[in-house]
Length: 168
Image 1: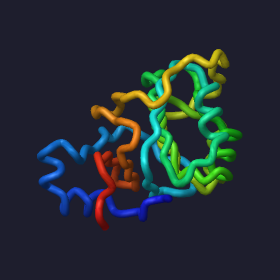
Image 2: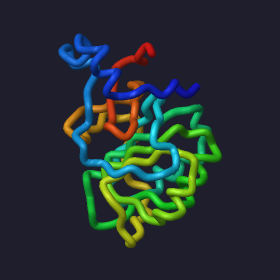
Image 3: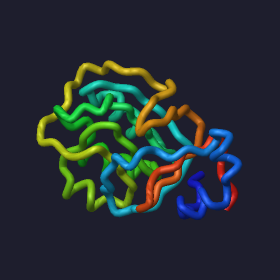
Image 4: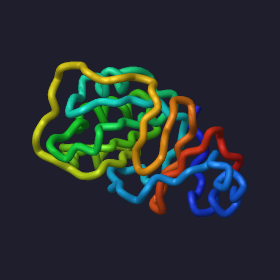
């Protein structure tokens, strides 16, 4: 079930104790906004890959149930690990959003989808298709550690990660 969107700035103002304890963290402002849904939230599923998109496609072919796929692509700017077809599939399968520590391609197609996408940038080169990577492992992106089952909240002010679902 998708979480209700909430304003990240308001969430920070209302949860100073969670910030102090490290239970609520903000990602560094490295990510560009793509997709029609600028505000999204949901439980996190993590994936670690390097210049390979096979596992990303596999995840997005599953039902999303309002979850957010967080992909640690090691910050590679040498190719795109996410394109328009998988994003369309994610929208159709009920994913709330995708955060990619790497590049995307097919920006016009992605921007036509009703899903939230954050990425470092765009690149015309395709990724490898070898199927290498790790599923459901802690990832470190945007200056913070993100684990499976945590909650991610994104809007135009930024991206927050919380150990548990925040009350609205």
